[in-house]
Length: 90
Image (cartoon, rainbow, N blue to C red; front, side, top):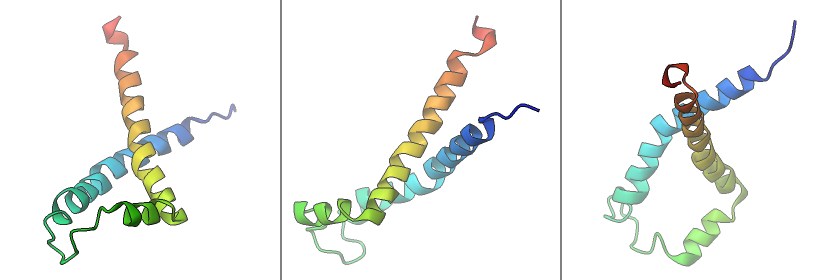
């Protein structure tokens, strides 16, 4: 029986779909609509350079941003690759 890495690639593909479907809309709602409109009583300086630098330099935030960006990119790259290598297109 040969071992393959196919389950790893499918798990990354599904993780990217979950992140793209669940977490990206929440982050867009929070950072793009709710915070600039001060829905939660947060001040207008939420996106100030010092606060954003403090957020981005925190290790947990770096992991969160890595997952939030890289998993949907892998998901979309996998879908594009599957669409371009479709045997019906040849």
